[in-house]
Length: 255
Image (tube, rainbow, N blue to C red; front, side, top):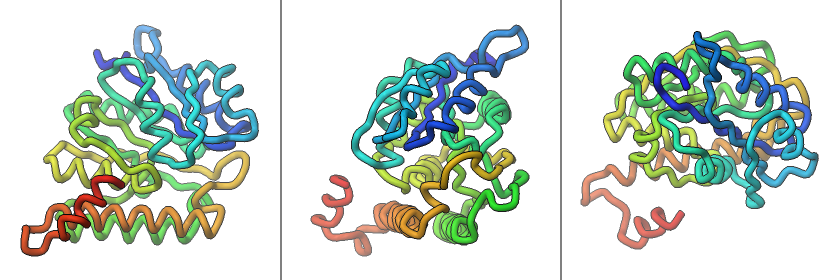
């Protein structure tokens, strides 16, 4: 519990056997002033790993749920389904790219009144090589599009973030892939939620290759997912004369 907020952590993971243990242990080690744990529940969603990620997460102190269908957003949704009742959720990747202790900075912002807190890699210190050139360009492009289309300044679509559970329910998240992060930010803007950014530090992953920045397929897939999500959310907000045809709108709802 943190500042009277029950807090849960969600970690989507695919083949992170050498990284997931330190991430889980770091979350479990965080404590408040009185010595109690910051996190009331830590759930790792093993998203079709083949390297023992689930076993390592369990031994580190997390609860584990398996999701056999690939998809970043789907893994987050699956973890949320089994998360214990909490007031706030922290999302963090299982690759050791983030300083987990900075989760308390995100939670401080929630306690101060924010609904959604984005850990901004742009505002924090980013170790050389932590983000590929394609990731940097894609992040800047998506952030600029949000600023142009919704008139809100955004510096990063970082996956290290915290959100109030009530706010998360209002957003009715549905993206199953890499559009999950931008869907959350844009919907929060549309719903008029209080969104703030907090600097977080980023480092090169300690083991293995990034699922996004480490391969051309990952970069292209993430870029397509993010841009298509922005386009869909914008189309949904258009006036009737410019809105998609009913069959197109129905297809969006089914996606």
